[in-house]
Length: 124
Image 1 (cartoon, rainbow, N blue to C red):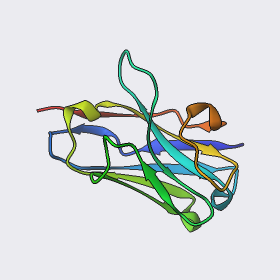
Image 2 (image 1 turned 45 degrees about the vertical axis):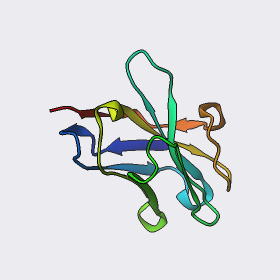
Image 3 (image 1 turned 180 degrees about the vertical axis):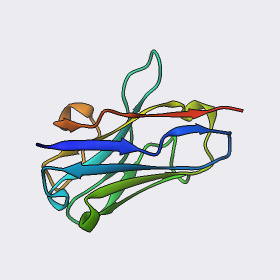
C-alpha cells in the first residue's frame, strides 16, 4: 500500500523553527519527485518546496526562499522540510505529495499520492 505520513508539525513562536518529515512506504522513494504543499484556512493549496528524484535538485516558492530547506534520505525513505524564521503567514496544514517522475512539478494535480497533512501554527 502506497502511503505518505507527515509528522513534525506543531505550535511555534514567530522566528522559530520546525522540521517536518514525510515518511513513505509501499514504493521506492528514489524514483519519485516529492513536493511539499500547504493550505491555510480559506485558501487554495500552495506549493512550497520540491525535490527531484534524479539529481536532488530543489525548487522553492518565493515566499519561503532562504528560510525553508527540503532534503531527502532515500535510504530512510524520508523527505524533510526544515523551516526556519517562521512567520504567522506560514500557518497552514502542510502536505507532502509524490509523483512517479524524475522532475518536479509545482501544480498539485501533477501529484498522485498525498499524505494526510500536519498542522503548523506560528503564533505568539
